[in-house]
Length: 102
View 1 (cartoon, rainbow, N blue to C red):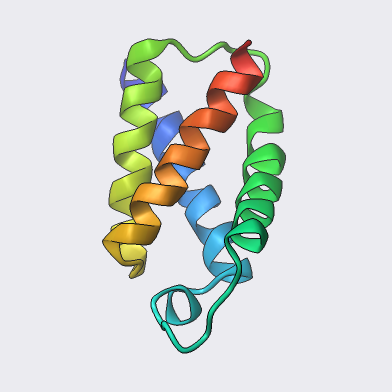
View 2 (cartoon, one colour):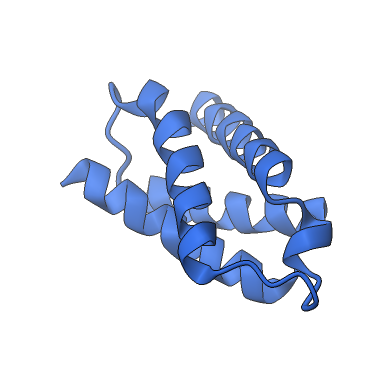
């Protein structure tokens, strides 16, 4: 399980870095710099698709998804995103994982 935890931590760190490169917290948290919801979904979808390609060989179960979601939320908070964006991104992330598994 420790190996799995390390893999998840590395994955969420990589995803958070890619998101912050494409949609930095400074932009996400600034109401003056409005970015459409559709554009944010596109950015997140592209980042998740690219990051999850390497995870295709091992299916992620229910507990794994819960662990990923929590680690992802924590990583985004630590990166500097506000709670509204963290909630939205985590929801999109789990939706992408669920679609991929189905």
